[in-house]
Length: 126
Image 1: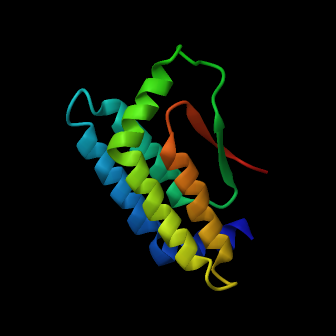
Image 2 (image 1 turned 60 degrees about the horizontal axis):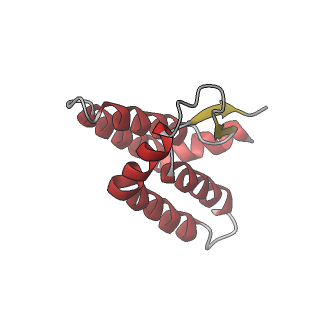
């Protein structure tokens, strides 16, 4: 089921969304200040490329004090809130029909990740 869901996701917008995240990440990396934020956009793009069967968790292994918290606040104010709202809107639109509910749930998962990506890592489930 994960492969089929990912394939349908990829064909109907996942590839275009992931390319947008990757391009945005590369543009953010043009400045030194934007490098950490560019890495987070690429991380979101990789999750957006193949979302079924993958999840994210807080990386408790290497937390450098409150740095992740400060970066997440800056991220939330600049881009995170808008990215999350966009994924929530698409999640609601896809969840209108019963067939679109699994893809809507993936958008809700991406919205949660987009709110605070610093300090989280993407894992393959299963």
